[in-house]
Image 1: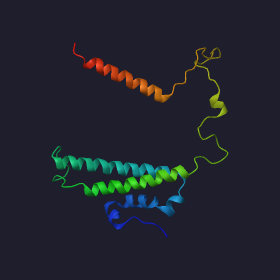
Image 2: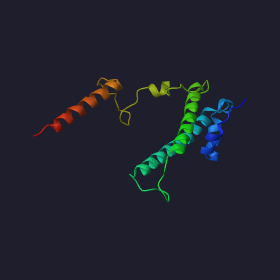
Image 3: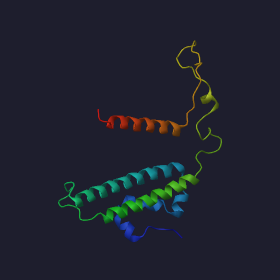
Length: 164
């Protein structure tokens, strides 16, 4: 049995969006290749982001914060929010399917992209006389880098806030 999007949700979407969302439902999503899934995810994310931006603009119009884009100001954003939710659910289904789809066929280069050739030490400057650096290589945890950066920013903000 094939799943289909409900009629009330289909009413909110354009024809191309309906086709894209229908491809994210069970029988159709299983038959898609990884590249097709990635392209579909990109299309759906763009549509979702566009719906999100329109809903935000409508909320601003309702509050009187911005000029209406059409002839009159928006009265509600319920339909646009529902459309955004339908598209967000489709993106979630694709993301979940991408987790279960193999990344590369067997026999190709390693998944992380590193090969024996890429791991070799390369000279830092062109020419035959280039020598590798004798300085030790430091491998810092990215979380530690972020923590230190945040501490420095906070300390600078405290210094800037002090009266002179």
